[in-house]
Length: 185
Image 1 (spheres, rainbow, N blue to C red):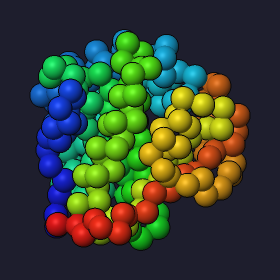
Image 2: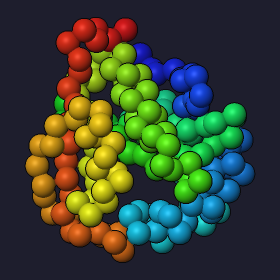
Image 3: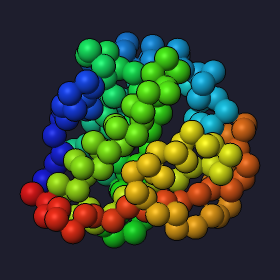
């Protein structure tokens, strides 16, 4: 099975694979410092604690090995400022992309550039023919990313439960198909 690179160098930032417990302190601090920023949109924040972060990092290793989920830290000058991931979606050939940033890293186009880099990396995998982004209708910051990157809005549907505190209850689903010139390695 072809895997994505562990590190994707993007010039002013990089995507670096989260690797188990060695990354615990950095991941836990990043999440801790981002809680207030994430709480309105991410239901998992309600369960955040050290144990949850350790379990996530252990699963990241297992998921990477199986090809189920590829999770990266978004880093600047080697320090994590956010996370992004591509999860095997229910439909054949699809991956669902998720992303978030530390509040100090927002407003500079970093999420858009990180998702663009993640998309390019995912399309090197022969089995990936499309990517999807799902966000709550009320989360306009998250909506800007797929719009800027040429994703097409597919549908609006009832949001998965549990709803995030600021959630509208409506999920917006976007899709980006493999570029015609991307052959997969």
